[in-house]
Length: 215
Image (cartoon, rainbow, N blue to C red; front, side, top):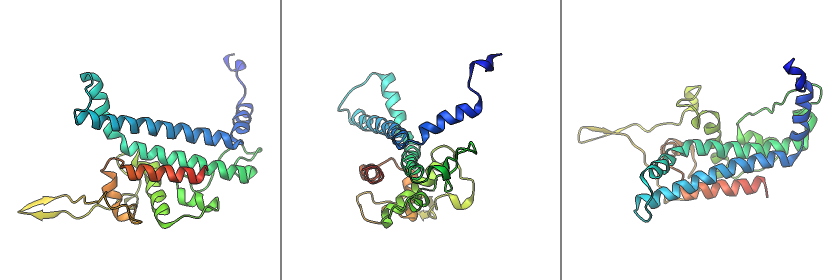
């Protein structure tokens, strides 16, 4: 039988478990995700150079870089996943039998994609802006980077009421990206950010958080 050529599920699980017990395995996965984000970031930068006519690309290649502009929600999802890997790696290092018990063949950490909750479990203190940023990334991990709608009405960023200007309703997206204050990632801004590409400030902030979890 073909299954005779493979390890049984228990043996297979134990091999993966042995790897997952190593902190460097989680760090490596986090770095893989971060590298993917950085590739998208370079595409985004190149796209601006194409638009500004600073460089010329063949038409087919230009279309490819144009598409990279619409990946910012997925990029934020990957940012969340990368930080989640670092935090879960810390938890498993602290208490491997709790999260990867040898006798139960399962892996489960309460909190799922909830990054602030994972930080709390890791005893990592957060500033207000850091907590707000991680809360925002959590909803991208849960749905914002892969589905068009959340699982519940309270999981969706709040949209501002439209304003009527000269008889025409205008959708209001008004975030000041020049204002790099401690309220940049407040919940009131999530809808604006959701419809906006990743700014230099946001990307730099992600890198700072990554370094905080993985010095």
